Length: 140
Image (cartoon, rainbow, N blue to C red; front, side):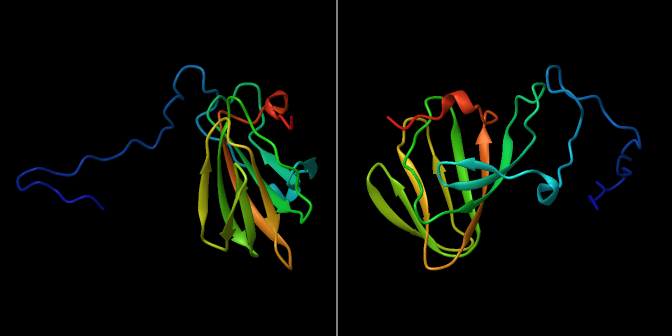
């Protein structure tokens, strides 16, 4: 709870919902990633939340990483990978870096990358800004 300034009472927050800023649609969205269908992606299988035309903020993906992931890059998208479980590596512009639970990596546009699972399965959360666009996935 916020501290009150001497002689002043803390402000009470209204119970009503504030409208979302223009162009952002609803004020909040909920997603059950377990209920979303898995779709193939270069690094494995992805369950993609917040993939709506009226969402211009970000999309969130839970990705099960494969050992035979394919290197790719994006021209417009920034991705932030956060490792939930398992260990492996991420290849960034040809250099391998170890990954383990609790680690995060920001991948800027133009960076050729692939996450590779180690001996067991590896799962990451991937926050994509702006939301993922399948037309911006390049392997050349």
